Image 1: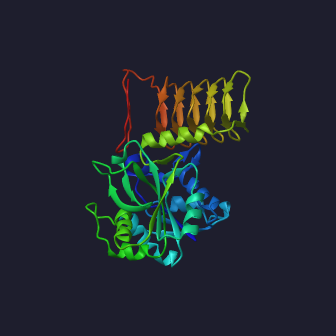
Image 2: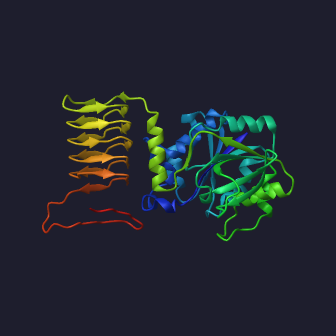
Image 3: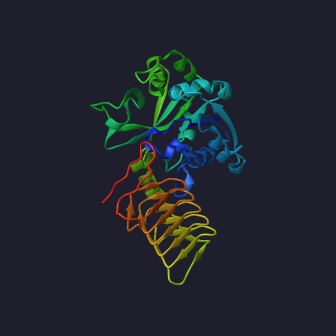
Length: 353
């Protein structure tokens, strides 16, 4: 069995961060989102992984390499344009061959992993199996209608959902999926939709099974979902200090302080993670905050946020619910007259008091 991870999207909902970085490499609890997918696949016993890549191929390949760090073999499959999930399956056909495979969206997190899904597929041998989760707002998702324990119908973002079962970004297919992707038409978005391909299988009497999960899952394509995923992962954190904490600082609760990090005259209240070679000086780091490597935070407060590498925050009274990108500088200006002085990229969002 093989795996196919989709990491070729443009990440428009997380701009401007994704103008210069792959959305799948944004860290959650200081680990790139894509790494969680690789680990879940490896834990399920699959070691042959294809990665669908696009414009950010070089960055993703630099992060994952050949997969040997995880004990897997990674093959990169180029998708020149992001023309839909079913299109990704189509371009990966030479890699996949006739083997069954799991398809995993690279910006999704599934807490319980996919081992039960893979095991069920291997035992029951349907033509396809889709991962589903009960949600409070099914109109935001692709929704499945079940009959007799099988998937009868899929509806994309219905106004009146027939169920509360949303499609999670994990699917399993045998070789018949290629017949489906070859016979569907592009949607109004000019994309080949995986929901249309699965519906083709259903309409042509192929066996499509549901697998309903009880644990949480997150599509981290939007800021609020990314921050919630960070919060949920941090809740399971076990404190560990490999850095330096001076005698005037307090570390409260479960906090990971990575090698080379320094906490000086500051309070860090967990769950939180402080990255390698980061310095926290005269500051407060509140719960559910992940600070990546090489960051300097001085005379500031930050909570329920993600700060990416090599950024600098100084003399800011309070930051909450925020995603701070790479090599960003946020500071209070002493220039006169007093004013907000901003240099913001396209699609930026900023809230001021």
